[in-house]
Image 1 (cartoon, each protein chain N blue to C red):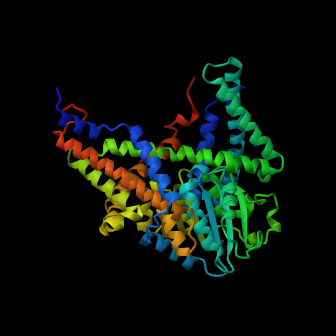
Image 2 (tube, rainbow over the protein chains, first blue to last red):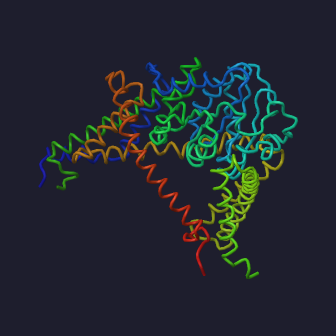
Image 3 (cartoon, rainbow over the protein chains, first blue to last red):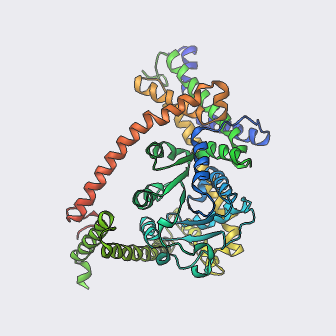
Amino acid sequence: MTSAKEGIWNRMQTIDPRILYILIVVVIILPLLSPLALPITVTSSTRNAYEKIDEYSPPGSVVVIAYEFIAGNWAEMGPIAVAMTQHLFSKPDIRIIMLAMGRDEGPILVEYTLKYVDTMGKVYGEDYVNLGFFAGAESAMASFASDIPGLVKTDYYGTPIEQIPVMSGLNDLNDVDLFLCLWSGTPGWGEYLRQWQTPYEIAVIGGTIGINGPGAQPYVSSGQLKGLVVGLRGGGEYEKLIGKPGEATAGLDAVSTTHLLIVAFIILGNVGYFAGGRRVGGEA
Amino acid sequence: MSFLKNRQIPIGITLVVGLVMLVNYYFGAALPPAKSAATLVQNWAVIVAAFALLIGLINISRIHINHLLKRTKGQWIFSLWLLAIMYTMIALGLIGTTKNPGYQWLYNYVFLPIDATMYASLAFFISSAAYRAFRARNLESSLLLASGVVTMLMNAPIGEIIWAAFPVIGDWIMVVPNVATMRAIMICIVMGSVSLGLRTLLVMERGYLGREE
């Protein structure tokens, strides 16, 4: 027969998940309704990405942005996409080419992103273009890299590429100065690394979801990724850098409260585990 | 049509295409014909991949029409829903492309929030799993627990308010132990990939051809 004390320790280790779920909903909703406005410190990784965009996109440069994420990742990827695209649109006299080769939703998400971006007087077709989706993933990447006019015949809206000034003079990836890879899974950075970065040594800056961050970190250390913005935190930091608070800034308070709650539950579980004689749920 | 079942044809195509791509990758700059051949093959691959999307559409339609016709218990209603939504999206996309307001409305206000909700529901499972799994049972699990907590607090602004060292330690975990481990994993993956590539080119690996009858 277990004593009342042992019962408490056991209960601390086996709290009904539904209680945790309800508390998570509460700690997410409350800061969204009443923001805590916790200060956001910009980490070196995000600052580095921001500075590298400045460095590799001087006037006259050509920048390609790949939107390789899905609608489901919008909460995390959206703020990164909006903030980094906004940063590029603030650059004078650069050409911006947006496309997708791994995710067929990419071109729609380009449009969705542009809803939140101030184009700052840039004209579609002259300063930027949405090339749409190219099926084939890695094959399409390789094809684009070696022969842009051979692969790209029209833009997303069906306008022949010869009628789009922003595409003039672009023959292969050697004509591109900077590549912004926004990805959430496969196909994504791994494929662009093999087909674009390694053979053409193009400068790449990445933006990805939190779960991909640790896997992409070795490429930052090796210099294959010049910079990396990770997760909602990275998005919030980038919004701060461009001086345009958005969805990530609003969501980071909820991240703080949720992470705190999970840590509190982990501590609770461990206190119960040790105080209860290292037994889980009454079993040795 | 027995020649279509002949496995020598796809094996031959794999061998030729694989060699063309390999030669181009290493000697493309010095061998312009290899570069041209590789570009041609890559453009073909894009066209083939576009056709594969159509095959996917036909296949998924066939499976779910079958469920519908058989009234598969617990399934047919979902099959009906899937087919209705899929063909509605296709029809709206074909009428005026994806710029069609109906298509845009369905994507922005139905698909996007539903997809985001599915992804967001992971928060519940991950938090529940963290609570149950992060127990300091031994040295290894204690290290996992410590790095997990530090990384969680590093990624939340409140972490540095609690303790200024959280971002510093978290950054160190990401840049030193994480990078070292990920590199080891990557090297293993690459060695495996090279081995698989060589086996495929040498016709020792035939898994991609499907089951032999």
